[in-house]
Length: 216
Ligand code: SF4
Image (tube, rainbow, N blue to C red):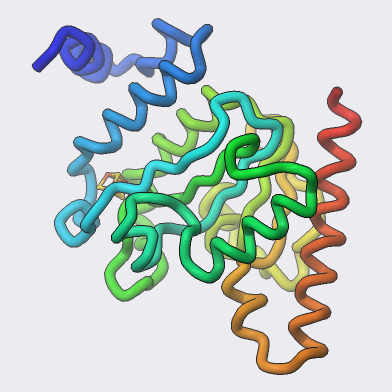
């Protein structure tokens, strides 16, 4: 165990967030947190996953995108949103004037739930502190929840994404805008429904961009 690991272990043992000791350096804090996630055995998901998927992007993003958990491709590669849904998310981010490198993309849980099932409450409870630490480090101007599972697990609610998408919520005083998960758009079976889902999502993202603009 190297010196940094020992420091992290010490901070964990005394129950203090490790963030306090280098809050001024978000990239370092993020890397240290990734290392902590990469050793995590706090829930059963660590047994079945191939790779941890802590998230990726800028250490000082204006926008964080949050999904529910890694899928098969993400599990194989250890990166978030890299399958077909990820390609769609990339296009959306590009259209917003950003890139993967200038936003942050993460998930509620960092290990793949088997068969892509929703994460169980105990898995979310074990993993959510990592997301909270990420948000604490990254200090985004706005959080985008991609789909119902991300929204409800972030806010501890039981909302319908169909009813609540595009509305403004808050997580620890940070604005939150929910929208559809890109996989929902891919599941549409007609040209009209696909087009509607894409337009709805884009209208939600216009609200996100407005929040970023106002916060400058
Ligand atoms: S899902 Fe989260 S809490 Fe569970 S083992 Fe993976 S990193 Fe740890």
